Length: 207
Image (tube, rainbow, N blue to C red):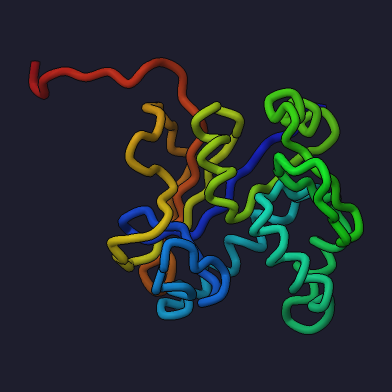
């Protein structure tokens, strides 16, 4: 088996992916817009997310996102959110952390981070579709090291002007290949990319 590493992120038009889900999600650096996604609901995004999770058989999360998920999803395995809660509760969860002594109480959880490149290769051997949800700091590492197979962005018609970005200043130059693009009911856009080979080339338009 050669599985895929799929990155899932909700972002604004200016690329901010920090704390889309709620005010307490990630208030680091004084971020004042936690929960910005709630102001622009889009039913199509929910369908896209569920469709994308149909083959998910493992999660790879940063420590902050893991803590948020572990505090929430085990208690939401019934009702409207039940299918997602049951899925997350059932699949293996890998937590990227340099802290070898972290305690991971959510069932099926284990740490990675000693040698991320080798561990990603092992995840591809063991799983079909490993999803990285949120986890902006981890995502930036995966993008820089080209340790991903698909980047799924749900881009909302919002500009915040501050916050953690998917591609911050200093991000590694890279080419991407568009896999698909869809427009939702309230202006959100689904953009799926795969890594593309070669260096970023420059030149003069028209020549």
